[in-house]
Image 1: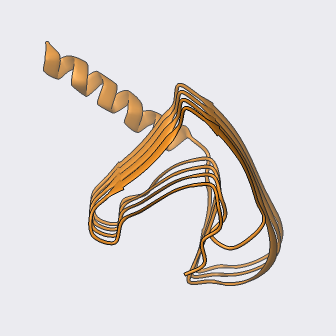
Image 2 (image 1 turned 180 degrees about the vertical axis):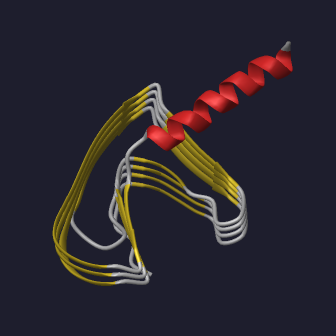
Length: 162
């Protein structure tokens, strides 16, 4: 009975992770305005495996050229993003820019209540809100970001330039 209950919860979380919004641009040349607005209540995003990523809302730009404006607005209540595996990443809201040529205005507003981002594994990263480069607005209540593993990083809001 416990196994059936676990599988039901796991499959529901997996289905929700597919349905939860995130704009991802990889190996692209993007110009203009990117806008993401996500409202998540009692939601979960789950990714398991090498290179895993789990996100609720937000914008991710990787290996791309981007010029213009990116605006991410995320409201998460009783929600969780969980990633397990090498290169794992768990995010609620925010804007993530990796290995890209970006000349843009980046704006993030993330409000999280009773929500958590959790990443476990080598290179793990967990964040709630924030922008990897500039211009961050953020509010959180009873929330946590936790990363476990070599090179792990956990953030709630803030700015990170690597």
